Image (cartoon, rainbow, N blue to C red):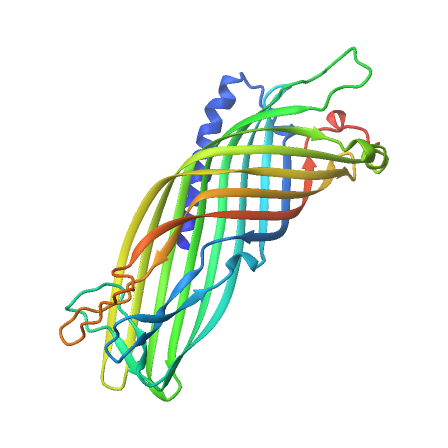
Length: 373
């Protein structure tokens, strides 16, 4: 999506602008030649709320109540997508580093629904807004059938600029050194960009169609803190050490400003009419994003490490749409007693999980490389 690209580009430029004075404050101690570069790819899951359909089954030709609702997107958390990620870390002295990190995940699903109305019932498609001036309502008295097909595409991405410190470097005079611990703070921007396209057709009336298109984009801008380090499982440590495996964890949490923009467009067409309603909405809230990162790595060379990384995160705010289900124009008094009046942005929470295989390469002269064990 073009808006995502603009945000990613602007944040990347801002990150380098921020990093430059930090490097200057270190009196030239940033070791560009000792940079560490990581790239990875794998799977992604995101448990976003279900999306309702603009189609309903109601009582009567001029509906009085809703008998059945349908979904444009159902059980999105069961869909598995893909992700790519990368980072570049620059040492700032012996025990500090600055890194630029990013990821991009894409997940999509499709859903079909059928409204079958008996005699005395209707299948209905309502406008996005309850405006008497909009002749948008389409109701078909039973027996009738409407078929819908929806496609939902979601891009989930993030970019952060992070400073990290080693908390227990160079422990001396002990038989067995404690596990290394790190602390980090970062500035972060996230995005969840959703595209939804739904088409509704009447098999018995080829001239009729209803097409709904939606963009629902949320930006999270904030800061986080993280703490973690290496760990080992006592009864497996001998086995993992013998295989050259090292494991680490990271607990991360931050506060964000969440800004959501909605843009929807519904077009209905028949043999004698075409009607369109469009709506733009926005919403904002404070959100918490936090989670756990687990990584198991193995050295495959003096410069290279291969690792399996899993990231689990909780979002306290994600948008949830509710669409108008009535039409109050003259002659169609169809505001439903038990229906949604007006389209609005609600809220829910969500979980995400990303697992990837990552390759990390350390740059610099051979003299700074660790021997392969």
